[in-house]
Amino acid sequence: MAPVAMILHSLQLLQDQSFKDFGTLTVLFNPDEETGSSGSKKVIAELARQHDYVFSYEPPDKDAVTVATNGINGLLLDVKGKSSHAGSAPEAGRNAAIELAHQLLQLKDLGDPGKGTTVNWTLVKGGEKRNIIPSSASAEADMRYSDPSESDRVLADGQRIVKKTLVDGTEVTLRMEKGRPPLARNPGSEQLAKTAQTLYEKIGRSIEPIAMRFGTDAGYAYVPGSAKPAVLETMGVVGAGLHADDEYIELSSIAPRLYLTVALITRLSQDEAP
Image (cartoon, one colour):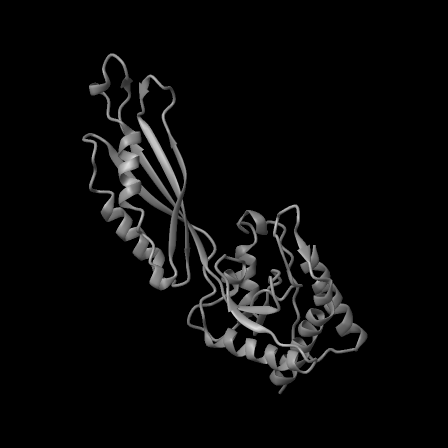
């Protein structure tokens, strides 16, 4: 709940200062973030396009603001074979598990390290009983990427590769479930980070602009090819160990991070004033 507290206390500080020079200040809390924001992503995108700047409050693990995040996709690989008795008539079957293993080896290099694209096969299922040749098998992969064009490239390459089968009579399909899009590096976020650095220096502190390997809702707010809204992620308190028993926040970061939100709103409102 630290991000919620940060936002509410920032608003209170602005109210205490009687600061009202901003045009529109909108707060959105989405309770479905941990499950992919399927119900709120449309609202995030619509509201973002009505504003000049968007702050998202994931916690950084050091004093930093994030100017780029990865996108997240899922790859779903399905193999259809033919079942038969493994003892009396194995040759009558078409082993989907063997074909799946073949495909996983073929698909292991779908990523592109040069572009920061990773594809990792993490879930595998196949067979029902030990004495039956499996008629179906499946696998799922986690894909992370920063270049928006990589979604189409990975799917096209994968669908081309799976046409080469090992077990005759098996059918293989590969499809993609698109998740959070990336917050790609862009001039708007970079400039916003520079403004944050300048303001942070006024209290004798430094802040680092970074790119994150995981995906966040900032990707829904980002508009490719547009300077607005400028999006900045990890505006929350410093902390680490997300979802773990030893998750923590650095108490010493609360005051300076509150200052950063308030100072940015104040400065950006003045910059946008007619």
